Amino acid sequence: MRHEAENNKWAKLEEKREFSALGSRCPHYGAPLSKGVLKGERLRCPWHGACFNIKTGDIEEYPALDCLPCFKVTVKDGKVFVTAKKKVLTSPALVKHKQHLGLGVAALACAETLRQEGFTGRIIMATKEKHVPYDKSKLSKVRLHRQAEWIDVAGHRWTRGTCLIFASFLLQAVSVDFQKQKVHFMDGSSQKYNQLLIATVVGRTRWVNTGMWRSSRELATGRNLVIVGASFVGMEVAAFLSDKAGAISVVEKREFPFQNTLGPQVGGVAMKMLQNKGVKFYMKTELCELKGKDGKVSHSFAAFVLVPLPAGVFPNSAFLKGTSIARDDSGAILVNLCMQTNIPNVFAAGDVVSFPVALLNGDQSSIHHQQVAEAHGHIAALNMLKKEKELHTVPFFWTMMFGKSIRYTGCGKGYTDTVVKGSLEEQKFLVFYIRWVNLWPVCALTQQCPGNRARSPPLRPAELLQRLHITSHG
Image: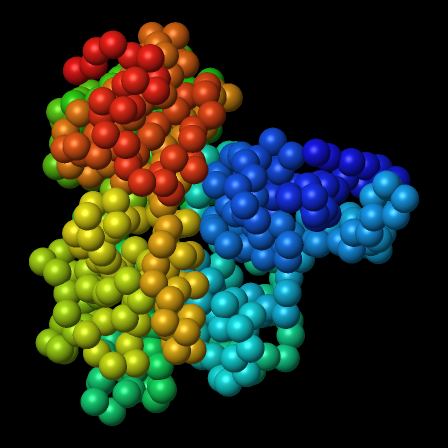
């Protein structure tokens, strides 16, 4: 239920004859929470799955970083009164004694949680980056031509405050001495630690003899564009530029877009959407080499080749080679559900780790996803503070193409069957992914993705078919 007070919106919720009043817009992308899902004391955003406690406004599930403003509610003579300051009503988010810092969302969420939980000690951030934290998903999902400030995760708030936080830019770790609890950096300096969080994300394959675009303006109208890779970033960029570039070709080594995540059925629908806009696909095709002139892409060249940054990623953990920290064959750091490594007082989070995935029956896996990385950082912070909290989060993926949103909740690696409700041809469907005898992931287009389904015990396929009134599947 949504109400207005002097043109300012707020949400009123009734749970067991108790009332709560809080901000009506999700601080992540501004989704109307009046259209969300309420279960117990948890309110879920209808767009991207962020969850908030309706009693406190606290963020309980990412990708949003900020809390919701929560207002005083009183009931008198059968009427409900909400007390709030006008200034708070105009703010979609509330920062509860937190200091923003970090240059990856896992590190940022960890620092946020440490401050929120009352840690007053020194936090030192070291990164080889030179930019403040930014939302990488916005680079391709929403608008490519936005101002840089629009993708800033925390705004300028993170540089203010007096919470003994030290951020060092352009400082790259080259080795760690776990016995002496010391990190060594490329410039020759070193830093001792009491507890260490490794959140170095992933590295990217360097293509020899190529250059990089300096801005999206180099994708000028009328030019021919080749996009390498047909997963989330590649498909989103192709959709955005389909009415701007002269011609677009997508090169992908697999048979369908999104094949590893959404599968061939949904990938086929997405491919047809882009083909209808004139985009050409070259599937089962691999890129061998990119050549430029003097290491640069020439402005006079007729075609641009776009290699989305996720193409060819690997765990950024080479500086740990030769140490006793446990890593898998790909180089990902192995952690438990508390985000602890095999080294005392050393934690790891984000894209650089492989962790036990509940939806894969506890098998170790890496999930390169913003929401998951934030959950990692949050859990790592709680366990740094000896609160003994295990990870419990369900990945929520989404993509936008031509005004249509494809949403996917869960982790479908190794699924053995699918059940489709609706019509793939009409682009209005739910796809349920089955792994052996259990249902976990769900993908939706033009229908509400039942995110709460993934937090409940798995359904047997027969029970699923009965509930959905489906007589057969295959």
